Length: 238
Ligand SMILES: [Zn+2]
Image 1 (cartoon, rainbow, N blue to C red):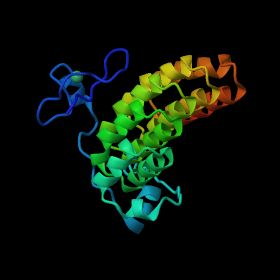
Image 2 (image 1 turned 90 degrees about the vertical axis):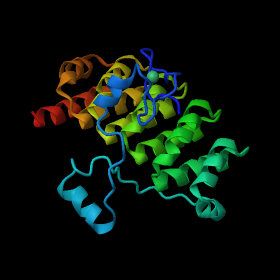
Image 3 (image 1 turned 90 degrees about the horizontal axis):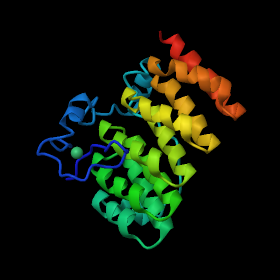
């Protein structure tokens, strides 16, 4: 498997991962700071919903997902390797999108690598966007690098926005710097908006000053408002 690390310009590392980790020798320190290498067992059913209500921090990485779309029945019934084959290679972008949606609902970490490839390579932006959402719902630490890479480099603002939303919902502090830099530099208002909100969800104090500054200086009123909202969130946790 290829290393899960990112280069300094936020592209995926091109070296092979060492056995038993997701990282090459150079990125091993990153492996140690990863919040979690394996998915925590997701609580299910009524108990999970109760837990989410009572202890949002505990249930944080099980991001709720109410979305419902009518995907083809045969696809829903296919095995996960078959669905992965479709998301990667089906000539129809509607089928690739639907396959990404099915994988999103299954939350199977086996889909992380193929969804990453879709996010990097699919020519159709709404398929890449669905792949980003699906990675966010899988919710292990291993999805952070694909989401951060696409937040920096995807040409489509809708895809970058999906990445910002997912990183906010996941709430890993490791994404703080990338969200902050995107808030500073992205030209698309709704990408900056979701980065500002995501920083409030992640809740890292280090961005307090940046949020104060953007709450005054961003060109867009909605972004300034989101920065103020997130500042309140962060200060509540102090
Ligand atoms: Zn590496």
